[in-house]
Amino acid sequence: MKTNISIFISAMIASVMLVGHGVKAADNRAEEKSFELNAGYHWLSPVKDADWADGGGIEVQGRFWQNAHLGFALMGASDTWKAKTEITEEESEDVYISTAIMGDASVTSFGASILYRSRASDDATLIMDIGLRYAMVNSSVYAEAAYDGPGGPNYLYEEIKIDNTLLFVV
Image 1 (cartoon, rainbow, N blue to C red):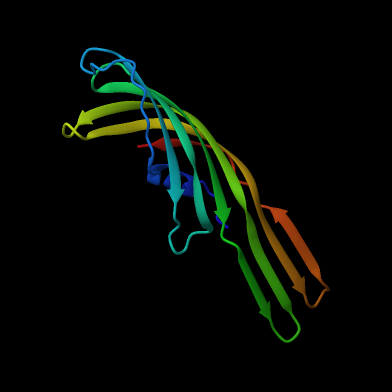
Image 2 (cartoon, rainbow, N blue to C red; image 1 turned 135 degrees about the horizontal axis):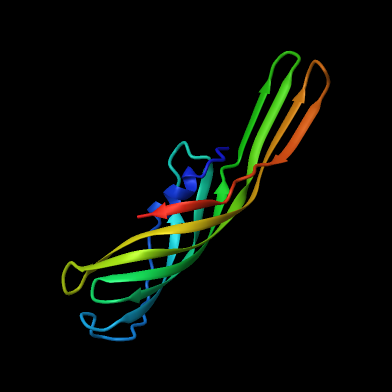
């Protein structure tokens, strides 16, 4: 199991806001400040050689627009990542080895962003989000190994630690 944070960075960059609801304090975007509350769902499908099975979660973002194009946002998110369960067994004449990885990790993140809003057309608006997120990881991913051969049997069951991290999001 890879214990580096690159999978979390990939997740944040690849996250897609599938649902968005806005509450606007003012209709006139060109002159007035406004507020939007957006909620979205993250769904992540791993690549073939990833060490996790899937991931998903929810994000809530409060957007504070200062004018028609510029604003800032405060956000909070909660995601769960399920480790790909892998069991490997090898046996030879006098040695037996078995390994397994299982479990999941919960990621809670908080952060802030600078937003740029561009009107692509009357029906579509593009928003660029550049910011920082602090991700707190609660790992429940475990590795298990068993060995039986010369020297006697040995067994190992250990939690895989994943550090909290600071993420840059575009």
